[in-house]
Length: 419
Image 1: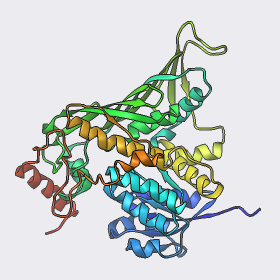
Image 2 (image 1 turned 90 degrees about the horizontal axis):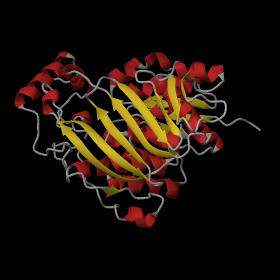
Image 3 (image 1 turned 135 degrees about the horizontal axis):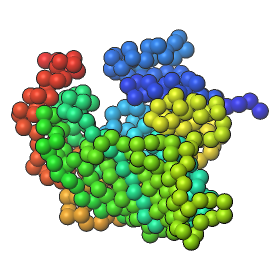
Image 4 (image 1 turned 90 degrees about the vertical axis):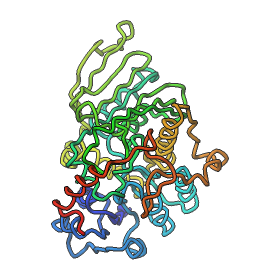
């Protein structure tokens, strides 16, 4: 039987350049085309392009070219759902690089489009595929830890004002309006992946600290969002969004009936396992620190090591290729993906409403998702700077004119905007 080869196009070459390189080396995949309107981004991937890869600067031309079976979406954070829907309506499978949807209505539309078209959709959330998290999943699946009762997930990514400005050039750039709850998949997804659980409800409180954003055009004065998530089996998880506090790093902890396990802070390849003293399984130590790797396959380990984001980029591409070519269902299918988007959206509303709890719909259930089909409220502004809901727990907060002026000086000096 002839091995199937997935033809894939890459939309967005700034972040997509990493995946362009990975898919070119991936067994079972071939990159046929890329699309980007930004000539600077395209120039950065020139060394990865050849005559076999066609370059587009218009998404409609790209998606109707007939050159791909699947597309990797690496466009702006707040624009994934419309692009994914348009691709699937052309019969093209979708790998979405970041959060699937920014409104509850988009969550519903994505699920319906997958069901209507029969196309495959996967979220390329990469943090579950750190070596530490894949090791904890194997340990959890062995049953030795028992059922998870309480979990914690943190993603801390502080930055100075100049770096923030470089990442968000322009007053209306999505990064300047992204609520603290919305960038939650790096914290939440590993917990769901390790335990196999699903979300049921969320509430949230934000830490308002606008002084940290001085000198930037960021319209979100919240420094961090702390979310308490109830899972379908009754367990709880404490999750933070993309936090600007506490030093850079990622930390995940699973507290179960028989003990707990966590990655060693500051590392992605060490796991600390601790059993209750009276529940130590045969052949295990009560407390141990393990150096871990992904699998015993040294070729795959080498590819992952060189892929970036702690190896997660490689595994996201690998599992998507398996999904398209061999119909192997990935963990982060459309339903699990949009449930995280819904948690982000409803957590913001919780923080605006004294921390009240919101139920997360089961997006496999048409009756439950129908309730949200017309909910188009978004914290991201249109071209005129108007949004339909606040992006911050203090809705009246906005940068000062001095902050805008400082940001614009940085953008001009870097050549990111011109008069």
